[in-house]
Image (cartoon, rainbow, N blue to C red):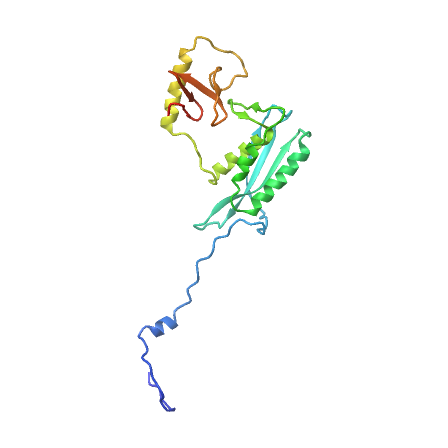
Length: 231
């Protein structure tokens, strides 16, 4: 293209060949920052919910724990499922006040965002001054609050916020063999309906709080989590 110069030339510079192309390029938009959980996020009309039922012996009726999750950054590489709120329902009214207070505090922590997994340890470390109890399967719960914490732990593992420490198939097979061998070596049996899923004379495991530790060949082994004093 020819350009007529009508003014006096006072200087010049060499224009690079790709300068025009650069000037006419569409602006590059920075990558959208993923949305993180925070208390300013409005509650959507639809939440993903999961309900867990527990029947602690310290309560007359069963309790139903519902945890609702919010889906952030849906249909993107940053999609994540975060807990948003929790509800606890039961016919039992003796625990009504503190249950409502607990659910509101936990829901507020969920909405704050960040690492909420600390709630599990805090709740599971609550001890009942009247003593704890064994739930079905021989797992010891130091209090009703601790069992609520165990439910939250189970849920956080299900949505991927906590690592699932499930035993491998090989470990499960070895423990099953140990259990069968131990039970075969016992000459007495129990018909007690309250017995747990493990041998009646099993002792408490300090790692998983399950009454599932047996001693074979001088070695104490937990049939629930596989913890062993012999390595």
